[in-house]
Every structure is written in C-alpha cells, then in structure tokens.
Image (cartoon, rainbow, N blue to C red; front, side, top):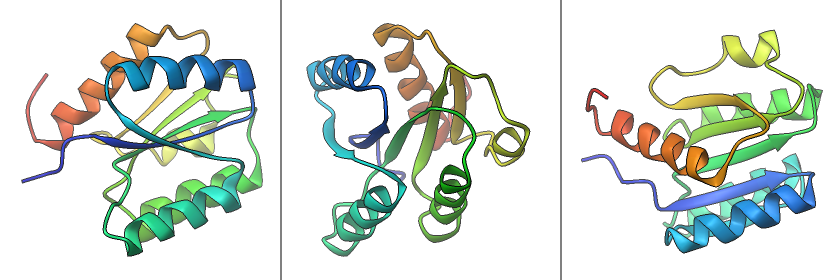
Length: 134
C-alpha cells in the first residue's frame, strides 16, 4: 500500500508565502520541515530517508528557472522516486520542468494560489498515489 501524504518538505524563497503556507498545512496536521535551498533540501531528504521517516512530498516555491532547481528535481526523481513534487512559481511553467513532470505524482501551479487550492492539490496527488481515479 502506498503511504498517504503526511511528511512534507517546504523549500521556498518568498518568506511571507512560505509562512502562510506553513500555517495552513499545520492546521491540516501535515508534518513539516523547511529547507533553505536545494543543497539543504537534498541533505534533509537524505537524512529523513536514512532515519526511516522519508518525505512524501516536497513543495518548491521557485523564483524562476535555475540550474539548481533542475538538478534538485532530477535528483529527487532518480534517488527518491516516491517523493511527489509540487512546484509553485509566479513566472509560469518552464519547458524543462514541465517535460519532467510525472503525470500521477507531480504538479506545477502558478501563483497566486490559495491555501484551499494547495490542500486540494495535495489531496489530488494523494489519491493518484493510491491509484484512484479522480
């Protein structure tokens, strides 16, 4: 059975957006950790995996296309394929990122996004991970 989404890693650069998102996700009883950047995100994902408490989802609030983000997406998909990814950006989708989305597991969304919409996206990924049709 596929694990329900419970543990989420947040990575973002917009402090106000991440703070608001954190408050709403905690109300929904998700277990959260935050990463300061792509290297920190990799370290936290690796450590959580080694401790037997892997992340189910990473939410990346991206400031725009960057080599570090592409590297992080590729690394997660290769080394930790069970982790779903939601990427949020105010810049619109980037071709390279869109091409690498896993249809049942990853989502790109554009700002602005409400907390309710974010919770709905997480629930949609959760259903997809369990093989249910929405």
